[in-house]
Length: 145
Image (cartoon, rainbow, N blue to C red; front, side, top):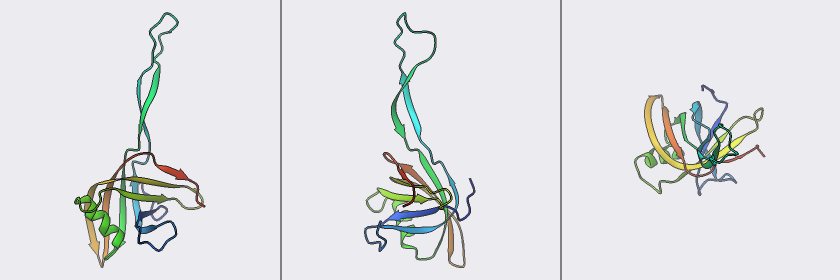
């Protein structure tokens, strides 16, 4: 989904000056993969009372893998940290905040691992990359405060 500059993407950083400790990485030019997959198991009892309809039970949920295309300037500490995480440098666990504009009024915070860093272009100090991020655990979702 092409979103232009509508969605903000931020990285958690203990050293950030912002009150929530999330610093903006750059401008989003593409965003995909945001969603939840519910894994199921057979819930049918197979007794005489059962009809012939399938019955399932939820057993786990998966936050999936998010792909974000980002444009950022040379020297962006947050982008550099995410690139380093893709190379296995640092703690490995990262937190991202995706924030939609006030018309949509939504933000999602996810923890996980950077699983891909595709180098795109660089022109006049502006980099364009595509990052893949595997969500670990339950995303936090809320309206903007």
